[in-house]
Image 1 (spheres, rainbow, N blue to C red):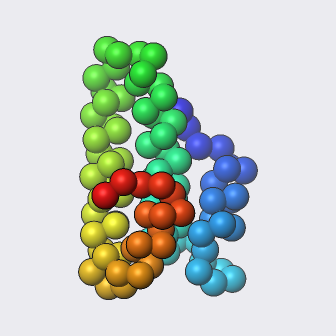
Image 2: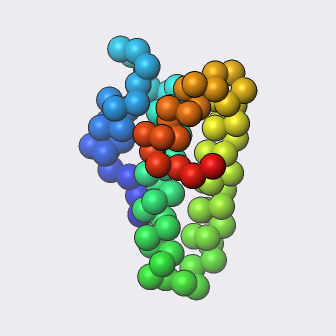
Length: 89
């Protein structure tokens, strides 16, 4: 359900835009997607975890806002990130 430090650094290495980039929109979307996937698996087996469901909805809306921002400032970066992460739009 949580993301490990190793997984986070791996995602940062895959999606960073520069040498010292750790917080660009692409990196944030990739980390959020990993957390969303883990929480989705958790909720499949724990159907009555409503607090977890609320957390999932908050993560999804945060990712949606970041993707909307990317789409507004650079549509090509937006298309690249949704194809790399297999996010449906």
